[in-house]
Amino acid sequence: MLEFNSEEFEKIKSQGEEFYKSITEVYCPYFKDKISFNARGLEHLKFIRTEKTRLEKDQYMRFKLINLAPEVLKLSHTVQGILETQKFERIRMKGRTDTILKPVRYFEFIAVIKRNRVRIIVKQIEDGQKFFWSIIPFWGMNTETMSRILHNGIPEED
Image (cartoon, rainbow, N blue to C red; front, side, top):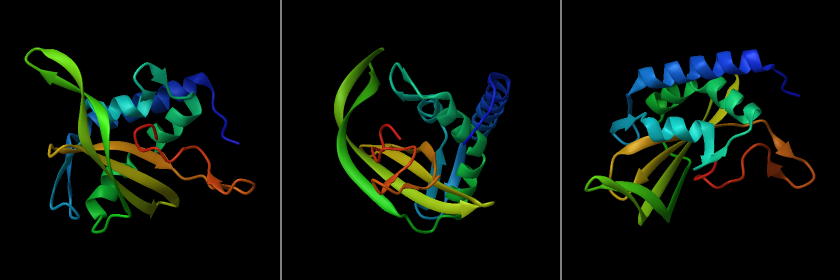
């Protein structure tokens, strides 16, 4: 069982945020393009969706492993999964923010680095810039339900 105190949590979260803000973008061989690490990805590490904060243990593991995300993307020549869907996205237009239904693509990259198995999700809204969306630690399977532990398979919330 993962155990930490609030001091450790704040330290890891602070270090993770500082590291994340230092990245800006990373070249990914799969896309032959740069992936940005913007405020939306950082917000998603802290929140499942607008106004719904992630559990501390969830944030702790994501921020503890965030240094692996650029490494995985730099080394990725293949994608493990693509999901194309439509989502309501907050879009800034003409000085205001609107929520508009847009086509969205999620790209999944899985890697084992430094004995950690992680999934990295890259998001693209319509034909816009691709950006880091999430890092999902892989802790194992629930043997009774044969489902993954920690995440629910919905890229928008994972």
